[in-house]
Length: 117
Image 1 (cartoon, rainbow, N blue to C red):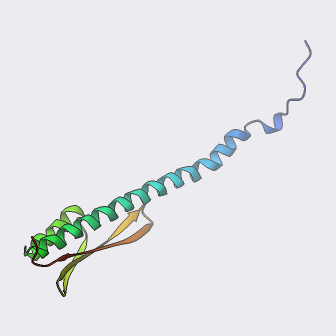
Image 2: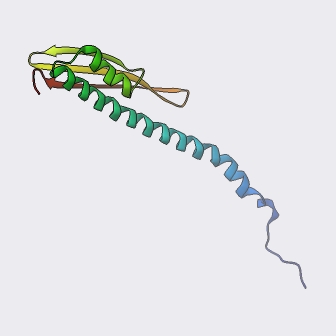
Image 3: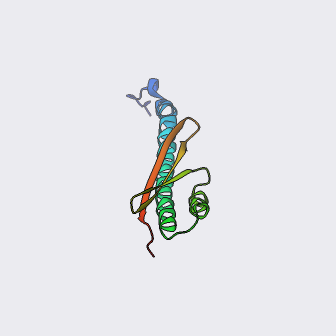
């Protein structure tokens, strides 16, 4: 039987080399995507917590109870409140970390009508 011709041994292992070069980029992309989704989830939780806190203050609850509502959702959030006419507003902010390098500042603010039930 005659030996096979047309086979080029110079490209042997090139698929493994290409995978070794592309794999870190794929892993980094996946990690950044997961981090971005986690930051978006934290933003939603922060917005929801500020809305709850504003409603509590609007009903006449204590400032401590309203702040506790926010910090129960996002433990390291910085919270503030102010009254704007008939509205009671709560603002909160936190630094979301994507990996160990990227910090994204997240802020949320919500207002509720004061004196309402």
